[in-house]
Amino acid sequence: MAVSAICVFFLFLGLCGMSGTVVWVIRRGNNNHVTRLFAMCQVAIILWLISQLLILFSETEYQYWISYLIGNLGISLFAPLWLGFSAEFSGVSKRLRHIRRLLPLITVFTFLAVVSNPFHNLYYAVFEVHNIQYGPLFYVFQAIYYICIIVGITMMAVKFAREKNQITKQAILLILSTAVPLSVNTLTLFHVIKSRIEITPLFFAFSSIMLLIAVGRYGLLNINSLAMRGTVDNMNIGVVIFDHYNMATYKNKALGKMTDAENIHSMQDFFQHFSLD
Image 1 (cartoon, rainbow, N blue to C red):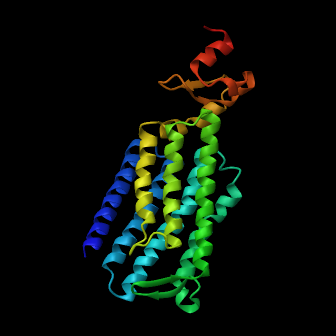
Image 2 (tube, rainbow, N blue to C red):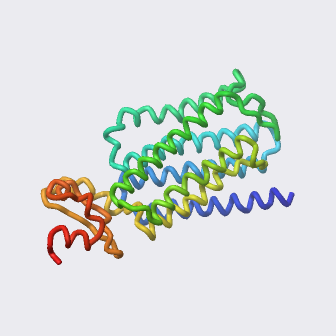
Image 3 (cartoon, rainbow, N blue to C red):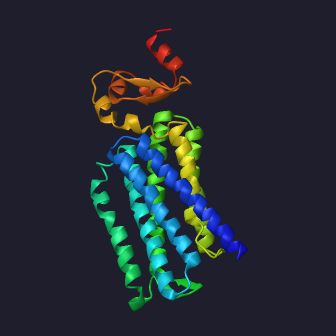
């Protein structure tokens, strides 16, 4: 009883944190595609958290079935949405447009596999109250989710490394926000960590707080500037933006054509390069 109460408390805490993240993004961000994708990623995790709360209060197999169905919907939405958000944020969405068209199929096939499980038992080998055993299809979809999330975080890290040219607090928060939940999920799947509920969504909820810190305090996802990226990139004059630490945070394409922009990491580099000091 005490364990269940603790689980409910932390799940509610995570649910409140996730809801707060969504509200913050909607209120502070522009109404653009990047913002909507980021918010939908958080909503997908909220579904996942809700399913875990329902599991704790489920007593019949039917209640368990509905709870797990909601959870599978959440994670099957999160993985492709995260990849889509990462591609949009990294500016490579046009290159991956053919792949992105296939991403909704992940959610569709997952839902079909779960709903039809009573006929083939390939997703859940055994589905009973307090006795869930996974089948081969479950691990196939888990691998697909992992690939989507890892590819997404890699694209964002590569973009960040190219523009920042250094490892900073933003990069650390970005890596931890995905590495921690994935590590916990792996340990849970291989029964190193044992729990009555799936604790991975809870860690994703707390990781969203790390993302929120990176977004709000350290400017990892400057949502307002994203709306102007295309315009500034296509300008014929060179543009470089510095943060309050005098570090270069953005350089447009025109600057790269005018000079070796890769060597401009700070305002001092800029002055030295153009002999303005």
